[in-house]
Length: 401
Image 1: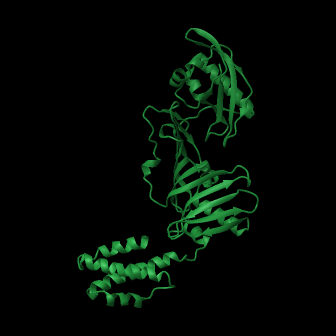
Image 2: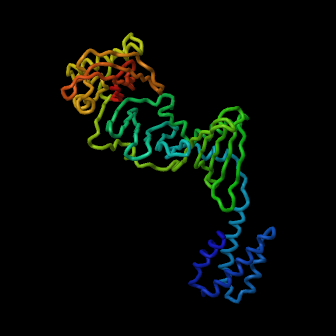
């Protein structure tokens, strides 16, 4: 039993004043008293003092052991009796965030890991995000001072630097994973009668409390919160959505640390030395859209980028390719796709994304190892972050020969 182990630990510290044999006898009397008392409604101090009178040891040593046992037993009885808890305690405890470190899950599998820091007003100062199932294939995003650094692991090995303001506090959708925001939203749902909350107190053998939140407005199926009853902080949130009786989807977060100091070095780019840097912060890149529609601009920039590549104009090609060091990029990575004939540019297809992205399929001839053949690569065109009205050709190229 947990109580027995804790009592033994406390009693073991008294060996300097009493013999081991005496301690064992007193401990036996105490444990028997505790066992008998749990079958009744309460244990009183007179019970303990009767033990002292019956134990053939010095009164001083016995008193020390029994006082410790009484204090411990009272503590255990208080723990076994659920204290009054209201969700508002968690709402209050989760306010005033200064930092968090969380792990996200999708369908019970690890997904993203976030570190974030905030100022006294709760505004985001900096964050770091890891996306990927292994260290070798992890996309890393770091944001600070309105500069976003993204590391794309091999085979790309690219460090993309862009301007990114946290307009409206929605950068990278952090609010979706922010434990304080989640708690406030749940509290609002329950207050407005859009959800029902059921609090499950921890058992004597558990340390955490579970809260089930069931939506009543026909939206997400259920949320399950795990709360530390001592700190009142949320340590995990699981979100289940779908229809009853059908496939249910899941995503969740685990709060690894909340309002703890974070090493500032974590928010500095620490990418491999051979990483290719594409700098869209200190220079103007891409092509200005002007009065063209998005679709017209996308077709035009692909045509110009491929034309500059075919002519060997790497200075212009580098600008259209978003600031990439194109002599290295277009010769080592995609030298086999350099055009040697007139390029046929297809219709742009929009890609669902948080910013404008299009894919454009092309058709032209290339010369590789002395052989001329026709290729059908698909180029990705993206709006330049922090440079409104400009587009660039990305290094994401799909080929179909």
